[in-house]
Length: 311
Image 1 (tube, rainbow, N blue to C red):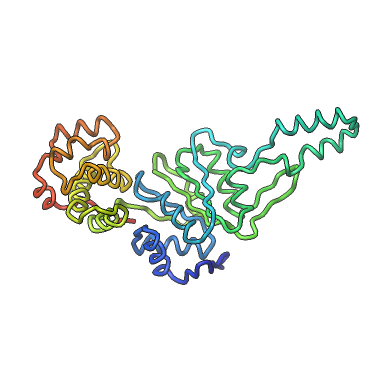
Image 2: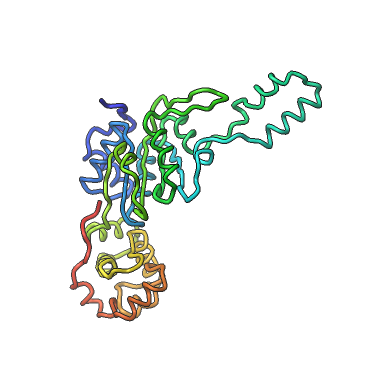
């Protein structure tokens, strides 16, 4: 059963969503567009997994722009708990209210307790804000960084989009938010959470798609420079580095080269701009030691892309 249909704008097929994503400069292949379409239409969370920098977070931002909905982001980290994700009480304001009431001579303890747990003292965190904001897009970013306990809590919230606040009662989403959960796979996320979601693995973009992204996102970038950068990025991804470059790093690299006035990627420019694409010293040293980008530009362009298809 479909829990949600969206008509703002009218998204009637994966192809329509792909066109809308393209209009917002996000180039998605058929698999990703289909997964995102089903998530929007069925009211199911979309679980995106893949290496950092392949476009997981950007998809959530683009969906929010397409739907005309606010993006509500919950950034996960080790130690994140329910209070930080759902709601908390503003203890400072509650204390001030108590002191003011006492100064005014209030004596009814029961009434005071009811007053301090009034909604005006509640601090809504991302999960609660997403339930109360219609429409909204909830991004649960890098869930693999959170603890198992938080994973279990998140699963409970996403199961029925309802939460209970003991002092106020139950709050349910009239229209569930569009939910995108991302993971860089630094650890395995439990199967129970994945079963609740529609799952899609995002690859690094293939050569043609990466060239298209560079040309779309960087005005002034020539096809020759975009091709050089995309092929060089493919060689780096095939080199077993600590952190192979994602599309975000490729964009940074191409932008740095454009800033330097480069028309193509040559070995000298590659050497001095590695910091734009490789963010670990060990990776930069490995690339220089193995002379991965030391070939002339023409050889780099003719070497093959070394990438696989994009999700």
